[in-house]
Image (cartoon, rainbow, N blue to C red; front, side):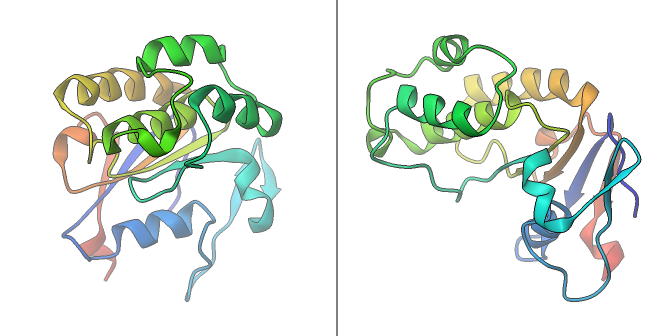
Length: 179
């Protein structure tokens, strides 16, 4: 399978079928048991151990540092990765009290932060696992608007069994077809 920048792909399948695992393999987070993963950017090969420099990954079970506030998290994040919009704009957009510790966030608030970090970090590829799992209708609509906008210039891969999360994708890959 070849995945290309500027295109959006959905990995679909039943619960427990391996969607999240496949997403982690494609993102370079897990090593495949069989086969080979080759990645390139601008025609230049990227070593598996360097993949993290070129991707963002977001999943509902991914943890955030509970003791930090949103301001502290964004400041820390910017020391490691470049944001595509100012941190202040992200804070305003998310509507979260910036000095509240993350441990006191709801699951939906945490998911919004993780999605914003994925959307607004300068990377070539974004990998999303069940992106609207904990979002209410308002924030699911925000996701839908933002993801379509950022997907135009990056490789986007979404693992989901919820059709609205990936309805705009160029290609839908059923995990069942690869078993």
